[in-house]
Image (cartoon, rainbow, N blue to C red):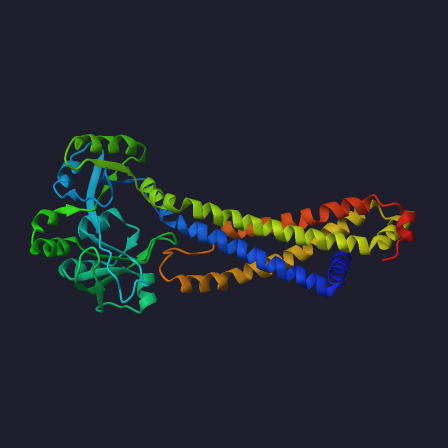
Length: 387
């Protein structure tokens, strides 16, 4: 307890300098946590994937649809347990800022392959009965204030026109990684609308991607090869990959940005480490006579080292705790400012662990050089020093 009081008193002996250092630590730790959370949010779709689902798309590009009759042939491939399909809808709700994912799906088979989307039986049946119905995520419902029975108007982009959907179900994720900001509508409604347009009959019976369920994750490469071999040299060749690889394909488009964000997060810590080291060096230089006196009184060099490391770690930990606490409201404000850009945005225990590790490293490194110097000071020269 005596040592703790001594460290606390020493840490705030020069209050202005300590407070400025603490402000820098708070900003650095908070920025580090937020930047790491942004990177994790970008990978949220990858983390939420299942090892028992494959994605089959056009080998040319995701923008090229696949014939609907492929479903039965894929279902017959050895190792396949289920097949469903989905089309990206891409509607706009009021303004482009209100972006959220919208998929036209085959309800029965789709939700069977995605058990992480928790929907009550009553809501599921209501959705199945209503061709104009829609299922939305709980976060999406909270964001826009939607509830069961509400009508959602969307302005079509890929599929022109004004579309209206009635909320028949609100799903909740099985865990925090599940995206609760999606909307699902009936694929048949979309197909019927396309068929009614001039020249649309040929495009009506096509889908964007197939989602394929398999029993053994280890068989994923083999099953994917079997599916692609089935349609080799056809007019619509396929590319089958794991759901994780499919999601990583989107993430890789912004890989350079993610690397830059990660680099900046570590640069912030290096900068505050330099600031902290300067603070501790100034502190040690001002107290040179005090440390020489301690050694003259019989205190071992290790005691001086403990004082400097203890003071440095105390300042670092106080700033770190304040910075970690401030990260949560800042992250909440960031989510509100970015809208639905990040479906899953949460500060994980891993991020907090990195913040703690960064704070401890800053505290230790900042005190290393002055502690080594003070442990080796000459008593006579130290006593002659005038602070």
